[in-house]
Image 1: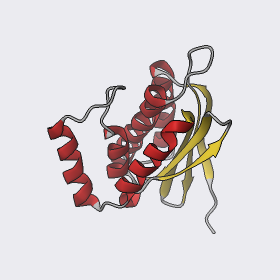
Image 2: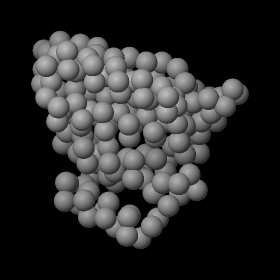
Image 3: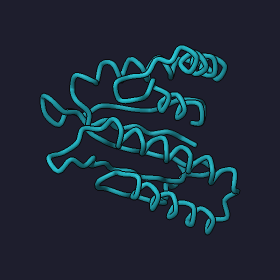
Length: 165
């Protein structure tokens, strides 16, 4: 069994300034590990997508911030990005159905579905059309998103998402 090394972890509010700091710290750590620029860019792009999903779609707390947890690990040749945030209980079935649909697609089906979303302009009230999840799946190893939901209360669930890179 391969050992898992924690490369980066963060717990707290998620916003653009913090995302910028996360990207800079990750880039530095990966350069120190001798990783290739292409892999660094891929991981940074996925971190951006994952973190933007958090601050655009997460429940805000009483301070109007978006609490979250992010962990980047390495095992063998693979990196793993795991992120956690709160969502409304009523959003769980729709999000689960959408990720299951995306996970059921191969690379070409993902590409075609992505083009269709862009062409048809299906934009939600939060300004997205599910493109974040699609981008994450397209860039993830095997085009799959691992996820689960844990109840926090009757109205709130933790959404845990993990991808291999």
